[in-house]
Picture 1 (cartoon, rainbow, N blue to C red):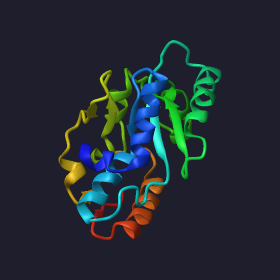
Picture 2 (picture 1 turned 135 degrees about the vertical axis):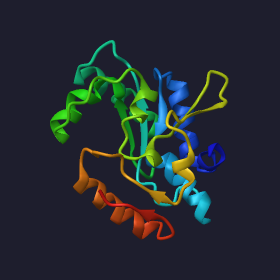
Picture 3 (picture 1 turned 60 degrees about the vertical axis):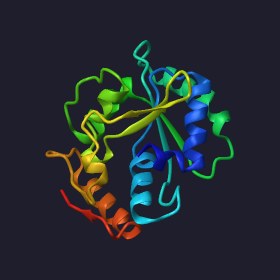
Picture 4 (picture 1 turned 90 degrees about the vertical axis):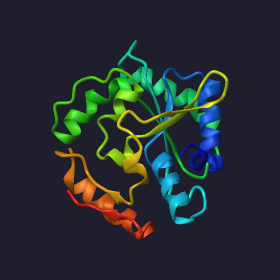
Length: 183
């Protein structure tokens, strides 16, 4: 798992940059992690199919958009010139916009690892960061079996079934060897 992510030079640059910037409770998550595993499993090049790098952090000290935007602006120069976006998101604020966007009643998250417990699929619920020594630290609170299973299933009651199904269809075109279950 870790080796698959670290085989992608852009993922390594994001991890190194986040560590240098000392973002609180940060992690590289979502497609840049699980798609790296899919690429390793299917013999594709590192980075194939990765359209952005989701860099999460957790800072509950100020839940304003202005505070998050200040972090986004501070991080931006680190990844200037990247071929794909690095999307920075304070997980402490997710409940403020997610519920309105998807019509849910999600409680505030406790930390970045807690965010993984609320992803649309067990396959997606993985992240990676570097510890203070620079060693990889894998976050997988719901386990790793689903990441290596070639069947991608939604969590029961997925918040956005239409979005999930569109995502399945687009990912099936890129990884036809995998089975994607519609919501």
